[in-house]
Image (cartoon, rainbow, N blue to C red; front, side, top):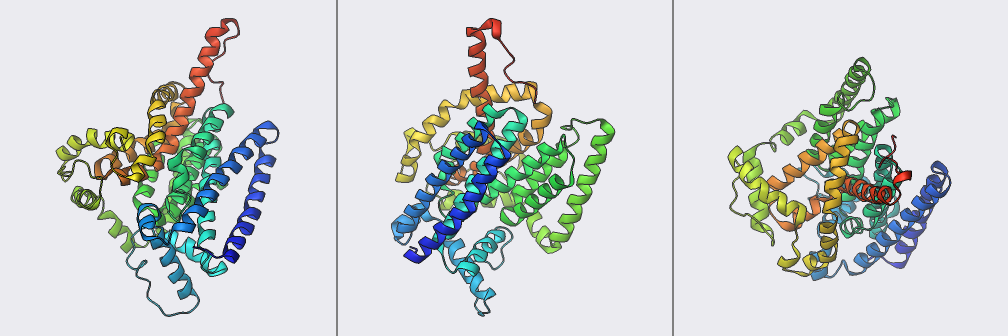
Length: 426
């Protein structure tokens, strides 16, 4: 638990930072749109800051920490030890040694502690702000693909869905992973019709940051964007191919410079079905909410056989009728709302395929591929629920599109003479 001085410093620092962000939102989006988005952003912060304070107060209690604090303790302790090493203390940091992935988040937390001391609440509020910034990026993506109304619904889903709020309140790395993914997709969406250096650098920078946080997601982002870039372009074939060559060259150059060969080899060893089976078995063995524990994904046939079950659990668990503990019980209201939004998801997906397929293709491929991957190698409900957030933010955009399309078609039926297309061309 942070003391009074740490609490004061944390709120002063982050109030200044977020006052600047709110001002920028209103400047970039003048008028009612900017005011509306700034209001959503502020309420996003209020929820996450309140949760951060609550978690900070009780993080030291063992039973509470086991249930809600989770691996926040790992990043808190590891970041603090790393900051002490930076100060010249010759101590061993067991949390960081031998990390293939996730080490980037230790550097972030250590940077905070190096400047401000062991201010746990400040680290939580930084994480909360990162979660709130992801709301803004999702808004920008949805607006580019559709329009401001779809963007507003997307931002609301991101801001107020409990699963998005919770991971931003402690010291989990999930918020910054989601922000990096969202920035990659935003850059690609903008590059589709505006191939400029700043978006190339944004894409490369966010991708490389992602590699230090959760390396396999980096490869899924690279696969989805590089594999679909030419197809999703709004320019001619020659211009599209030229842009693709430049993007590939910059990306490979940056990757070769940033990634050590030894690290790449270690990461490649994880991309085998045998390793996938080990990961899934470990989760099923040690998790308290395992599903399909005897599934064998070490063969292609095994992967295909477990995929339907895995998709069901990944997308719909925890099931309200199968609640086993307090954490699962707390998700029941959210899960019911999630189920209620499934028709909007399907409606939005179909509409996107019909009318926005090319610009949305990188996002659709990323969401589909990572969803299938998680469905195969996740082995317990808790982990599946947590990892789902990385694709849920894009599902929110599709849900928002479905909600708005239904609303507008209802208006068309009510006023046929004034009917307009469900979405205006961007």
